[in-house]
Length: 172
Ligand code: GNR
Ligand code: NI
Image 1 (tube, helix red, strand yellow):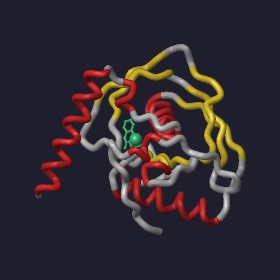
Image 2: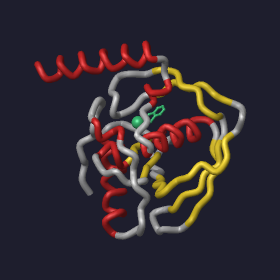
Image 3: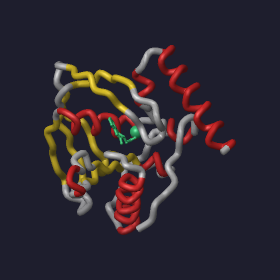
């Protein structure tokens, strides 16, 4: 396993639309293991493959890391098959937009289909943080970041704040 570097905005690769995985093979499983290790190392609860520079429709999640217990889940070629009309607002952050947090409105409940690490088809019904996080990660597969759901003004303020933080970090 290896920790891979996480791309940060405005890296143009984060805008790419990721490609479906044709076969769940060893290479895909290695990528998934690296993504899980990278997610934990960065204290994240989710990660999409494009965030480590791989434009593949793969994401990993672990939304319940209390008590240090780990329950990582991998989703390959996920598709939302149903979304509730009811919406929910949640505070979101992104490992590719460090230190920026804001409220995003999304469907409150969703149903999804995906392949697991064994290439087996699975279905899932989600609400709460799982629904938020899954939709956030699935946006990454389309090249969409959570700030793209904000007003133009809020987005440009967020990106300015990020640029400033990056400059400060580079200057040491
Ligand atoms: O670690 C993460 N936390 C988070 C919190 C609220 C809503 C979404 C997320 S996902 C984020 C990790 C990440 O950037 N995944 O793409
Ligand atoms: Ni993200």
